[in-house]
Image (spheres, one colour):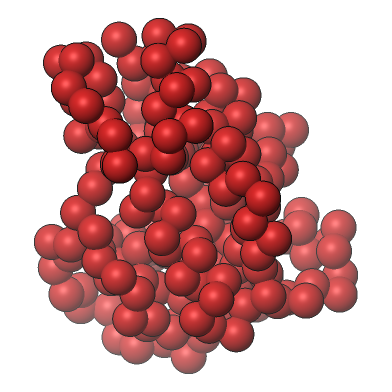
Length: 190
């Protein structure tokens, strides 16, 4: 089985995440995409993050019954901050018959060489890169295990969504209805 891994804080998950995940699951050679909720990204401050179980639940609500998408809390029991190479290594040991592919936005390419063991990621795993609005073409050479996928480009960010919520503006159609309801009922991001 060939599984794409879309890592993220998902703070909150929005339609941009879902469109990329579903596109990768249905328009590439991947059998499924797992949305891996990261408790703490080494490059982002954790003080703005909602509790990981709230974020995990919202991802579960968002993907619903889509058989090609799955939410994963694999990093919840791992040391923090989470490093992609460690998660990939753990998953490969746990599921030896699976091939894991890293899915990442083009905006992450400039920082990719600074990732822990980035060279090992490319040596042992494929990386599917999708375009991001406003991404600056990087100086990185095309790498053997890196594939650029022409997925839809949406200019939506979780930061924008959190700002809308604080300002009591509508987030309808930007997040799935079930996620919007969960945020409203639990008074999140206010």
